[in-house]
Length: 65
Image 1 (cartoon, rainbow, N blue to C red):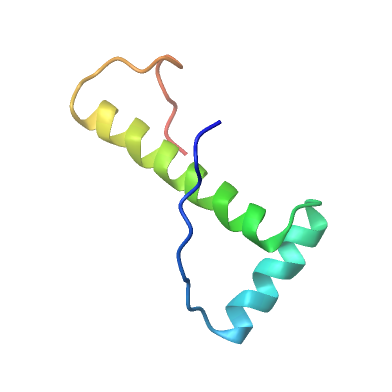
Image 2 (image 1 turned 90 degrees about the vertical axis):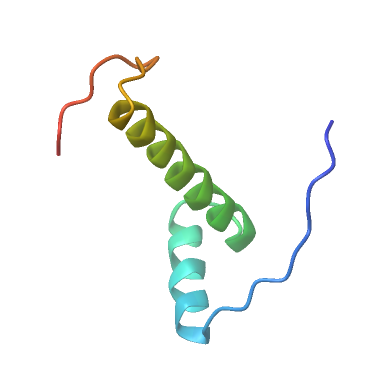
């Protein structure tokens, strides 16, 4: 198992409350929700970067939203 990186994240109380509510709806901790959202954002960015560069995606062609 790889070690996890710990770091401090400063966010507004309003954003924290929104994340906490969202996390509760999806049965995650706030930390888990933030990690999930970041992973999804990186995955989407990497896929878009690959498409922009003409690299074939493992998922096949993407339909625009």
